[in-house]
Image (cartoon, rainbow over all chains, first blue to last red; front, side):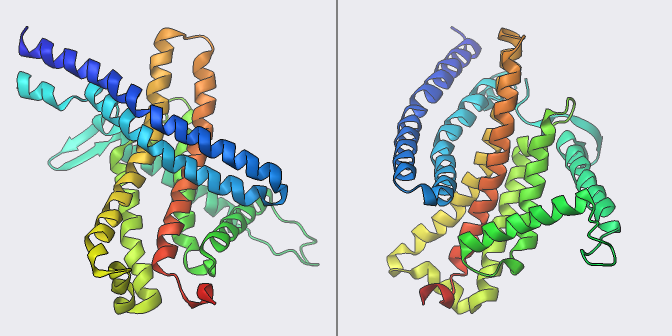
Length: 88
Length: 230
């Protein structure tokens, strides 16, 4: 197989693997944090504002790890820097 | 498919390059500036003379400023006056850039890594500025060697990495919505892109909020003053 085909194949497989593996841990973490937040809202409904604000900030922080994986896989698919090395 | 609107170049002359990101940033700025000007041109105070006639726009803007003020006060536990212009500008710009993206033809400037890195560099620079203005150069630099001197490199690395993560978080969220809509248009063109678009609106609003909140948290951690300890 020539270089172009090899790079294309490896990029596509790795893009899929990146987002597949990289979204496992953030999903578990988000599930845990949401369930904890719901529990604490059920215990203390008065504090719902503070809890949900902290929850949103925390969720965004957790989610950003998955977003990094997404960005990497998008770069591999649509803006692959290795194409230029072969073609150029 | 392009994953960054900076790849769309409208005009190029030497090193001057007018990209879609730049143009739509200007459009957003224009909308915000003209909108605020129209509202604040005939501003009125609620008293007996005007008989409590306050225009709708003024009400909306007052409520917005009040909300941002309250949020800053709750999170930083300091007087918000100093931080309001910076944080408020960040929030309103990102908010409108994300929300306007449902208008067909509008390319959200926050979907470009250039814009988000510029915004997070603003936060990166503003943290030492607020920190030094609050507790002096010595007091600010002392934060870096807390709790021990060994933590100095880690503190510096965290300063840099949180700037990068701030930029990539916003970029990834906004860009992902656009990409997913584009992919779904090819697969299920009938109804599902609308749902994803609505989800994208929610994500955009939350991301604007998160960006502003994190900026306050970073600034507040540098300016932690005496009031909090008592």
